[in-house]
Length: 283
Image 1 (spheres, one colour):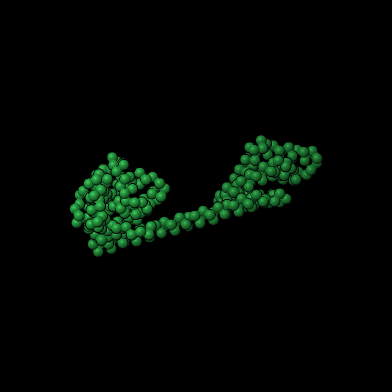
Image 2 (image 1 turned 135 degrees about the vertical axis):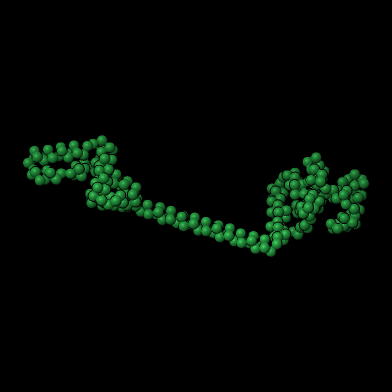
């Protein structure tokens, strides 16, 4: 935040970072006496030697001077204390600082609290750990960090590749859907037959596979239309015989012929073939 904060350790445990009420006041743009007043008004909330220490009680003049207090300031604190007007020199632990922020309870106070947690109380913990490690430990640590970073990079690359493959598959699927939707109604018999051939190829490419796909399309059509194609073929052949049409032509009548004669059956047939194209990814 652009301020030099003196690092003070100890008071509540070995190497525990602490902060003077004077420093807190400077950071929060307050007077020290106002920070002291907040603590004194809520003193029951603060546990002595856990949240706060009054250095004016536990340290002599020499100790206070080592913390940067002038003799004039020390005398002033003593005078206020003698008059019962405060004169506290509070030192706060991380927990004590969190409590004073809760009492302030302003957006600015909480923002500053978050920054101090990150940049003062918890900063350089890893550096301190490194300083206590041997050279061998440091090399092992660095290798472990390098391995972890490599694994994270590989995981990121894998996710990226999978995402690309998924996107490409989605694009391909959309193209298939688009092509299926654009089946030409003028050449519907040829287009549908091409799709059925491609589906049959996906299912083995044998003559039996082709017949199975064709039968599957017809069965779905009959279920949706509530009609029997074979019955319609027989009826059409009977009509042709009565009309005197040659036996060779009568014998050639197929289910696709009766579908072609009925607009509703044709629409259902085309829809079923489109669905199959999308299902098998062909068009």
